[in-house]
Picture 1 (cartoon, rainbow, N blue to C red):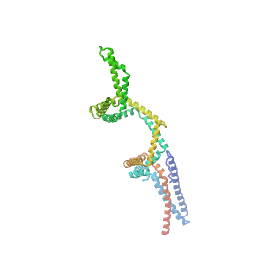
Picture 2 (tube, rainbow, N blue to C red):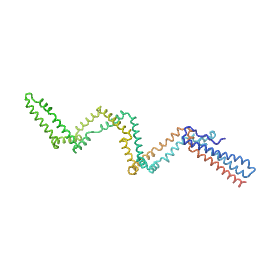
Picture 3 (cartoon, one colour):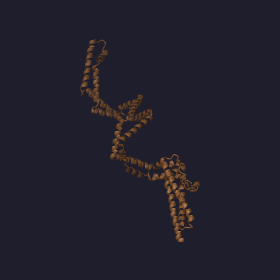
Picture 4 (tube, rainbow, N blue to C red):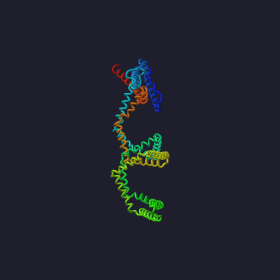
Length: 428
């Protein structure tokens, strides 16, 4: 009968750490079995000497009890992982047979004792997430690495996303928002603010100056209009006099509008613009016209083409900036990361908000999804077959369980010696 039971876990797919555990397990099994063999040898020797030497009876009793204790504990330990000696004795091979129950119990234990909301919140609060993250982010090499990883992720994302889909998504979102928005009132408020502060005067100055220059440089056009509209019976010199007079008046008027900031025409333009801004906010007809213009713009097919061109240009520029480690975009991003890290490391209000958010998020997950999180234990163990589960668990705790065999042998020997001694003293 072999009680080494050194059917070690299969070496297939074992990690380096599992290999170390496997060697340690084999050594402890050999030691425990060796101690049992020593007890058997001592028992045989004492049995042969007990008729000649009185002390041999004490040794025989100790060795005998040691063998019984060692064998009993060998059976108990082995029964956890497999059938001892291959015999299908009831209540043996406990782990292979009940692995699903064990997995569920372990999962429930972890969820209850390690993922309770209060415990998770206490751990998060004591860990100082914000300050630790901030200390890492404020280092230039960390910020550079984070930005580089983000740039790489953005480039990969751009490869995955189809340009047409992005354009349709963005334009669709913009269209829905614009369709819901009545453009008249907000445009009116913006225009009223601009006109009230007089910020449109620079544009008016530009327009009236251009008008004056056009009048000044287009005498022939004015003369042609007068000639074309003059009666056929009027003499030519009279047409020239009228033309000169009309041109002079128009040029004088245009120059006066250009040079006089308080000209009546400028004031009329201001009044018109202010009234138009008010109508955009309150006049139903003006607001309806603004809505009609908005819809004509939105329904223009060229708008989609423009959105595609804008996206392509923006995407190309962004990718170019992201791919260059020394680009202004990446340098700015790195500086922003460092500044954010410094705020977190300082432990101020920003750090407190981050810690609170992390604690709330972790607490919520623990309170509502702890069992779902630990469910991976159930699912993983359920996928293992019985022998595989037994091997994996034995690798983790088998070495320590061999001490039960060693202790059983030693304690059994001491107990046998004590019992034999008491029997000799009391009954002998």
